[in-house]
Length: 157
Image 1 (cartoon, helix red, strand yellow):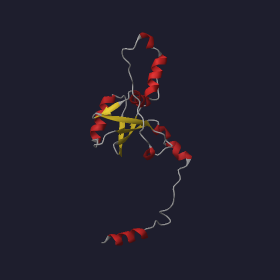
Image 2 (cartoon, rainbow, N blue to C red; image 1 turned 90 degrees about the vertical axis):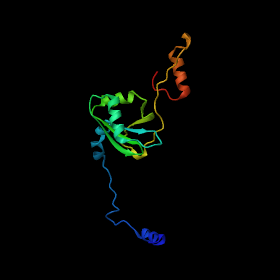
Image 3 (cartoon, one colour; image 1 turned 90 degrees about the horizontal axis):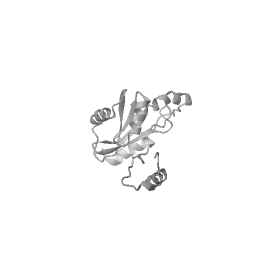
């Protein structure tokens, strides 16, 4: 079959009236899943090479040492939906950042139930910063805040 013929066939394809129906999610339906979203985060391994999904699941489950279970759903593009049994485990993982897998940064985002997972952007990842050998007079919260602000938004001093 030639390309021109395929193009003509493709142009003739149309959705039927039934196939064109739009499904609208009602607020009540969206609220049902909201408690599940509170137990989830999205993780993305920043690597140009592929990630072994099973190795990622196994390694991170062991490294995090959680009290409850954790489930990983592969979202493609080295991204995972990570669901925790307990909110305390989720908070433990978020507060322990940054995390690495196979020497690559694992970026994490909390799930916003009103935003499509496809639209998420991994732009920032918090890091702890330590200052060493400061003069005693410079060991103030103001200096720490100013230094932190010079490299990015400060979450906590």
